[in-house]
Length: 83
Image 1 (tube, rainbow, N blue to C red):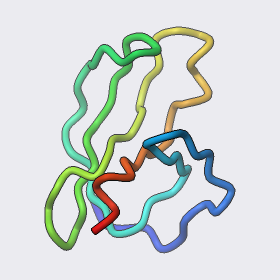
Image 2: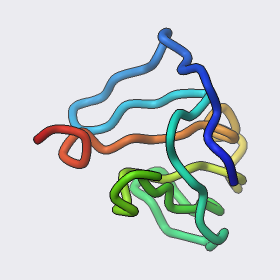
Image 3: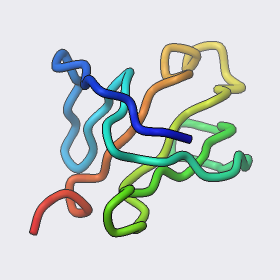
């Protein structure tokens, strides 16, 4: 997939991850079911277009009703973004 051109600056920030609705300079990998701390989700890893390293993931499907707000969100791991 191609890169988008804008980041949603109203990002939600947790201790080690940041959440955006849009993406910049990343590609989305294949979809897989993954057990997360908040339950089972269908997610896809996201990769830096420059270095091809995994920098986070995208929530495609949240199976629990209380987690539906995550669908379509991109999660960037801070450790992957800092030098």
